[in-house]
Image (cartoon, rainbow, N blue to C red):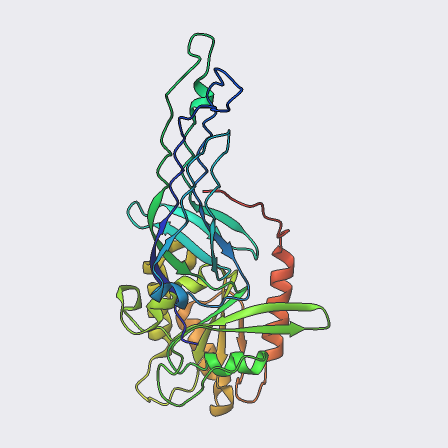
Length: 345
């Protein structure tokens, strides 16, 4: 299935049914009085998070969603039938924003979460409600209210605990294949990864976390260069970033320190909160460099790096388990209860 992580839709709630002015007309009931019923409520539009939905592709092609109107009231105190609600099932991690104001409407972070997008109009009142001691034959009734209409922007942010970032061909896809069951495409040319990949990393018998691989970043990504800028949002929910550095680049003119600093600058330009997330260095492809330790030491000195770092070979698996064990300990130390109450728009 093609990965779609953005879409724009219109939602239109149903109009409430009109009330009715009616009077009892039985043969043997003189002065029967008013018996006009109320109109039914218009249908509403809801967003529901569904873990079985993985992409927003359905909303790329079905852009207008309408709930049904409520029925008008009838005589004999009969109320109109309420309009049927519409539920839009979206991937867990979808953020819904009002297209005009830019304000967030919903953040579907847990499976089964249900949020109101557009409220149906209330039904009108029948003349039954206007009866009084001085107005025994009211002819007043009210019309049903119009339902809400909205233009919405949908944005999917994948839910992962750990995010991978780095240059194209840094070995991110190979790394995620080595530590999980994910099978992203791997090749010897840049931008092999065209959409995010998620993998579940199992550490021990009962400890797991989710890791995300996004397309490689290049300088200028925050302004739209390359492919990675389209998917930087997917790192926003992660709690830890693993910055993969190719310690044995094929290009002899490559400058790993300069490239690493460029990626850090792109993170800061895109989102200050993303820049401030915990970030570890992971030096990859140590199997291709006999002097890997010397290169790593020079890199750390040039970067003045004081944080955690690891050296791995994603191809052979060397060092990968140590990175996963450390990540699991980090995540377990800061894990909070996942209880979440449902939000309303």
